[in-house]
Length: 310
Image 1 (cartoon, rainbow, N blue to C red):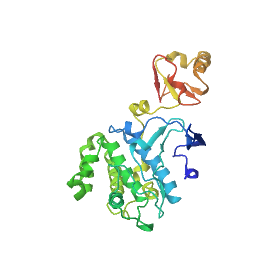
Image 2: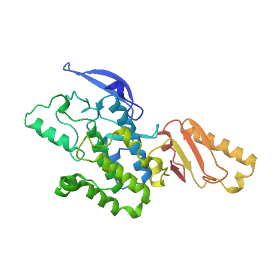
Image 3: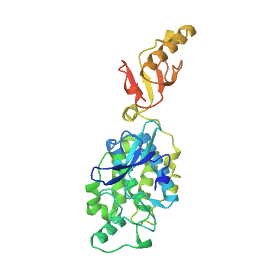
């Protein structure tokens, strides 16, 4: 599995063996340190955030599924934000398996478990062996992602809802109701596209569910969204934005402007390696200072007044 990790999956830096005092050898993976998980973002956030997460994870799933692998434990805690790469990444491949050669009896977490996985887990608990092509397929990952996106959009945990008779009878009607209840807060057309995308992931028949590759062709991804300031605060980034520091008069005096650029860069270098520094003379961003550091942890250190993160 290790060679399958792509740009939207957690980066593997190395592998080593740890020997305990009693002689037990444990294989350890050295992985990149990631920041915020989607479980911390389930508050009904912007369409930009939902779209960003959906596209990144679908790209990761499309790669895994093309190689014939199933993640099998997609949930909010297994999707983390990478500030350095500015994308969401998949982690925890402990339950992953090769499609058609499933060597894991129990898959997926309650609340994000596809109907066919529920049946298979019940059979495994009863001691019934599941062999060959009768096991679960990559479609279980699309079901889990559909639930995650619905929770991100609505800000509601759906575990209890999915246990209800109403969900089992007509889950599509509940999805429609959730979107109708939130329609005033979001643009109408993108909402319909997202609703249809989620419904295509939550079909009970796994053979009828969309694949990761077909999901990426959804009209939902053809509409550009701008992030809200709340999104930018939640998601760490190597870019620092400084406010209320530059007077308009300084922007149109070339000598003063160059002096300010030099002084700002010198000051910001005290807190880490500065990749670039920009002070726009016109809108958008007029008079604001944008500082790009080499990594996302650096701009958290300075306690400068009037600062905000992008």
